[in-house]
Length: 101
Image (cartoon, rainbow, N blue to C red; front, side):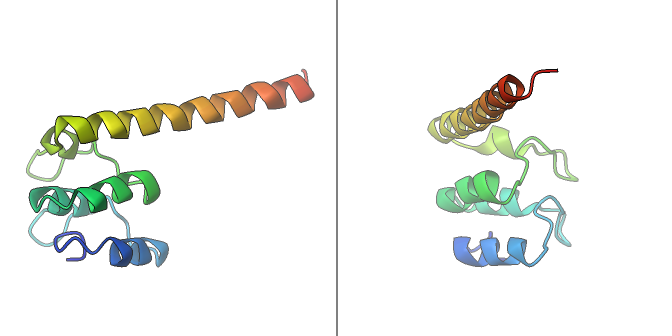
C-alpha cells in the first residue's frame, strides 16, 4: 500500500522493519510495480537504490518493472548501479594492493 500511494518514507520504514520488497501482494503486484503503475518515480528510485528492490524480477504476471520505467529514470538507475559496482571493484583493488596474496 505504501508504494501504491507513493509513501516513500513509509516504504523505507517497512523495509527497515524487515518487509521483503521483492514479494508480491495478494493481487500479485510487487511493491516496485505498484509505485511504477501510479507514477511515483521518487518511490521507484528509492526502492531500487535503498531497499534492494530488484527491477529485473518479473511479477507473478510476468511484468518486469524495469521495462515499465521512463527512459530517463532507467538511465539514472543504471548509472547508479554502475557506480555502485565501480566503488566495490575499486575497494577490492585497494584491499588487494594492501594485502597481496
